[in-house]
Length: 390
Image (cartoon, rainbow, N blue to C red; front, side):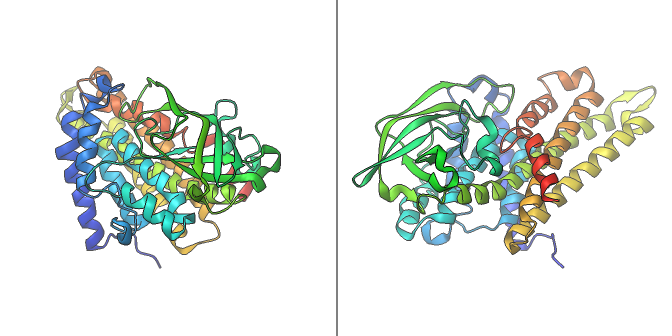
């Protein structure tokens, strides 16, 4: 039987993340919305995150990281997201971009790519480039076998030439490493699939405008354009034909991260609204004493705990290579993200007009929660995959 209780070492990481979020992130929470296109405050936050070792948390110590396991990563993500889901997303998406390198890189590539990403001297972000303008979530659907991917790689002597456009990746324009899902020929489906690392400053790598979004202003999303981007063949992870397999393993690991970010956001909103309802007096008694409000909080608390346990089960299944691990990861993502949307919306509701006001944090939790139902595979797609797996 697997225990979900955190070890003392994991609790130390959890406490470090909690203190970092409270001391280094929270003071900027009211500033991030107006800083969506310059990210001045995020630069400060990420520099501190790097100094504390968060950027390289999953990276093997031999490449400068901490070598934290999945449960530790989940505990850290929850604490970050409980204060700010956008910051958790930016750091988590750097880990997302590291995952294909961890899975498929050779020793030379791991040294060359992972060491700078794990740096404590500077905040080097990762960006994984998947979604494309014309095909949306097709790239995350294993049934499509990457046949709609239009980012094409051609060979030229000892180099690859990349041409194509990617949409909506996190950390676009500010990352040091771009992990690109591409193909040599869409008609070849998975046989032509590949994943290539492109380093910042490579000629032909350009970016569109910064997207203004409903939530998560901390996370920079931009169009990424590859115009005859020339990279050495030594930047290919695995071999041609491995891209689809590596991608599906990568999203299985990272969907549960989206689930835990959702748990953290739901918890943050819940804790704030609960304290408010303990002190807010309506009808001669505290709001929490009204049976309807009390029942709403009971339902929210149950959903948060259930979501967390689904994430932990998925993390355990991935570590044990359980045959149902992909399904468990999809379940965790769908349930937790839906729970976060429900919980944060109810927190706004129970606080009334104050919940809707930007003077209070719950409206931001609600705005931030929406996108997690959409990214890393929209929940409607994942529900289809869960159903088919049954």
